[in-house]
Structure formats: C-alpha cells, structure tokens
Amino acid sequence: MNDFLAAFAESLQDGSFIQIVLSRPWRDGRHGPELIERVTARPIDLKAGRRIQLTRHETRRETHENLLPDEAVDSVTQMFGERFRNGHLFTAEADVIAKTKGDEVRVTRRSPTKQMADPTHNREKQYLIPDGTPCPFLIEVGVMAADGRVRAARYDKFRQVNRFLEFVQDVYPSLTEDGPIRVVDFGCGKSYLTFALHHLLTAIHGRNVEITGLDLKTDVVEHCNGIADRLNCQGLRFVAGDMSTWEPTEPVHLTISLHACDTATDVALARSVSWESQVILSVPCCHHELASQMDRSFMAPVQKHGILHERLAETLTDGLRAAILEEHGYRTQVLEFIDLEHTPRNLLIRAVRRNCDEAMPSSQSESIAALMTAAGLETCALERLLQSEFSAGQAAPVPKATKPPPEQASGGRESAGITTPPTGPVG
Image 1: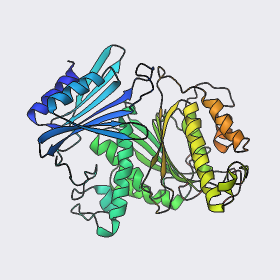
Image 2 (image 1 turned 45 degrees about the vertical axis):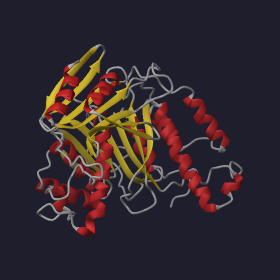
Image 3 (image 1 turned 90 degrees about the horizontal axis):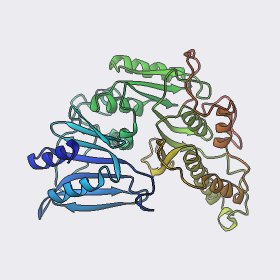
C-alpha cells in the first residue's frame, strides 16, 4: 500500500477523514467501453452506523454505494493506479495529493482546505463558501453582512456563486501544480465569479494566481479594480478591451466565458483552444448564428414551430461546440448550471485538455461533418475562428512574448465583445 492509500486508511481509523477524490482515469481502453470520469467518497451516518458513501461519476449519471470503512479502503485501493492516475485526500489534518507518473506515485501534503461536515445522511448543503463565515468579497458586494450571515434577498446569488465554485473544484486537480494558476475571464462584467474564483484558489487552496478579468466597459473595469485594491486581492486585475485581440504573456491554465453573447462565446472558445488552456468553462448565451442557416427540412415536424426551431438551433450549436472541442484535444461535458442572470440559459460547457497519452475519440471529424450536412450547414463560427487561429500553421501555439497595451483586452459579458460582426442575425 503506497503512502496515499495508507493515509486514507489511517484517516478512517482516527476519524479525520473528510473526502477522497480519484480523478484522471486511464483512457487506453483497458477497461472496455465503461468509463468512470471520477470517484468521490465521504462519510455518512446511517441507522446501521458509520458508512463511507462511494460515488462513481459517469458522463450522464452517478451511482452510489455505502461501504464499511475496510470495504472502502479495498475499493479505493483497487481503483487508484489501476483505473485512476490522481487522488486527492481531504482530512482534518492535511490534504494529501497523489499523482501517478509512469510507474511512480508522487505524494505531497498540504495544509487542510476542508472542514469536517455533518455526516448525517440528510445533512444541509455544505458550501465551499459557508453561510455564517465572513467572506470579504461577498461582504463587499452586499451578499453577506459583516458577521458572515447571507442576506435573505441575496441568497440566490450566494447559491449561484457556490455552484460555480463546485464546477471549478471538480476540475481543480487538472490545473497546473507548479507556479501560479493563470486565469482569463472573458467578459467578466461585475465579476462576482471572478472574485469567487480568486477566493477559492487563494484562500481555500492556498495557491498563487494571475487572474485577468476582461470586459469592454471601462467603468465596470475601474469599479472591479477598486474592489480588488480595497480587498488586497493579490494576483487579480481587470482590463478593458476586446477579447478577439488580447493576448496573454504567459501560458493560460483556466479560461472562463459566462454569457458572452452569440458568437462571442465562440471567440472565447477559439482563443482558449489556441492558448492550449488546461480547462475551459463556458456558459453560452443568445444563440442566433445557426438558427438562420439550418435547413428547415432537417427536422421539419419540429422546426415548423418557431420556438422549437430556436431551441433546436441552441442544442445544435452547443453540441457542435462540445464536439469541436473534443476534436481539438479536450474531454468535454455539457452540464446543467444555475443561471446567473435569471434567464433560461443554464448550460455549462466544461472542457479539460487531454494528456498526450490519452486516446482521442474516433471519427470525431466525420461525425461533426455528417451532422452539419444533415442540418444543411456549411460551417459554424467556432470552426471558422479556429481555422483563423491556426492559419499560420503553428501546431502548438504559444503566448506572444510581448505584453499588449491595456486597451487590447477582451469583450464584456453583457455584450458581444468582438470587433467583427457575427454571422447571422444579431439579437
């Protein structure tokens, strides 16, 4: 038993165990068609006594199993190394992180980032930023009172912030372990989530960061920079400008675009791919481009109804975006997201860059081409933008060595944020 598994067994014995996460599954076909993306486990108290609830997270479902502590150790031992390359153990004493490289397992210990939770089966929701614990940026923006109590009128916003952080927490093991984590937030707007992300990475995980929030509106940028200065948010800055021209000076690890209008979402995705961002999080908005181009005979009984035609165009757009990201080296999920603007736009595209040893999905290009042909589409914005990004023929694009002037930054969350008008009707 290696040091990581020994620490897991010891934490179950001494009662310090909080959670364990197994991630980065082997994708070399050794386990056949079944693929579990992630496994998590936590303690729960049932009438029969203390159990460890093991959850297998697949692409479209989750399965749960309640195990005795010894059974949980056996199950995790079988899966770590054989099915999963990485492990993250959270205890009251420390975080224990295991990374598999070849035949070697490297184990590191860090200060604890999670607190013991109520293990009762029907416990209240445990948030990454808990109610009742003062959080400076939430107090600054009026979501919390000075004592940490969430204001009743702002509880929806509080839940939305925490929901977003859960999505980031899930992919945190995929982000770089070395140096600062570099983030670009395209069209950051009022930046609730930019500040939340800074809090998660710095206050909870203890990492150094270089986070850039980009927006078209100079007054919004000035306001957010003022908050960052007052809260002494190290490594966080806001820049006004255009997302289609802004360039980073160092590699980017995480990119975010929330509610970038219509093809501005595609601009953000294309820039992220060209920078080889390790993780991409995108909540698309205002799908118009394909609605005017789709062949009305594609699914005629559905498309004769205007509202269904629009929804089909939205589904097709986001499905193509996810598939094209897969084609360019990412593992992609489309997930339900609590919307931040109180509109029906509640899907999140989450993409994690594959490692060199991971197999690519077969016939992805053919599947995309077949779908577009069936729908009567010649091309889509993301395809065109990626062709433009790679038109210079660079196989592995790297950030430019020079720093751009402040006026060259990305678009706003409330606007298209691009200098070239999108294809199709604008609304």
